[in-house]
Structures are given as C-alpha cells and as structure tokens.
Image 1 (tube, one colour):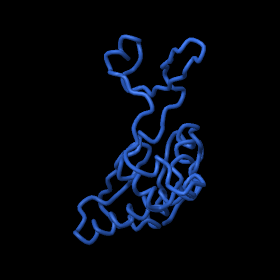
Image 2 (image 1 turned 30 degrees about the vertical axis):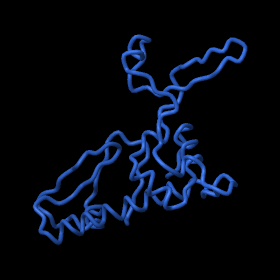
Image 3 (image 1 turned 90 degrees about the vertical axis):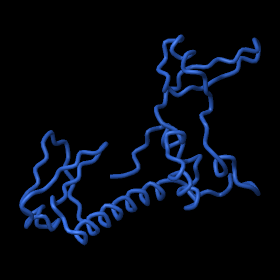
Length: 169
C-alpha cells in the first residue's frame, strides 16, 4: 500500500505523480467516493478484473487498519482468571437502558449513552448521560467477534473507545 500524509489541509490536491503511483493516470474518468471519515478515488468503467483488484486493495487497507487497532490494544489474558470475562462471551449490551420516551421526558437524546451510580446512604440509583460518546455497544457484532478471535482484550478496547484514544497515525 502506498501512502502519503497530508497535514492541516482544507483542500486536498492529487498530483499527476500520485495518480501514477496509484496506477490511475491512464484512466479517462475517475470517481471520488466520500465515505464516513474517508475518501476513495477509483476508476470509472472497470472490467471485472480491474474491479476485483480495487476491492482487493480496499480489503488490504481495511485489514491493515484493523490490525493497527488490534496491535494498539492489550492481548486478552482472561483478566488473569481461569475463564474468559463476560466481554469475551455473548452479546455486548448497554450498561443502562431506558425507554426512549423516558429519555425524551428528561430532555435527553434517545440515542445517548447512560451510566448509573448508587447512593448507599439513600438507596437511590441515579441514571445520567455518560460523558463518553463511544463504547463496545457501538461496534457491529461481527467486528466484536473478529476482535475476540484475534485475542484483543475487549476491556482495553472499550477503555480506548471511551477515552477517544488515537491509535493510528
């Protein structure tokens, strides 16, 4: 994979040299696909083999990015127990879940993350909006399963999600 880094740009320019390096200079038309936090330039009007080569290149990039994430996290050691922890088995569910009508009544976004705390002296349980934006519940089940199979510590991964840690670049 060929890579060039662009820092603090409000406009991105792809040079003829960049196009040559990516084997895109001979194409009459190119397509720019704007994704969530990514942009991809591919040829327009590809043959079957050309399309397969592009998808293989994109799969390679996906694999490289997921590998970087896996390397940034600790390896699962079953939390130093005999059996895997609850994160390594079964579905990952929100820590606190309330009906959306209750959240709306409280003036909260129905998609917000919730946390709770218990007041021992009063017996009250307080449910409030979490300060973090992401946790394991934001990941697709197939992606979680892949991390499990690779031995990624899901507790460490969740900590990095909650802390919004930079793990690439």
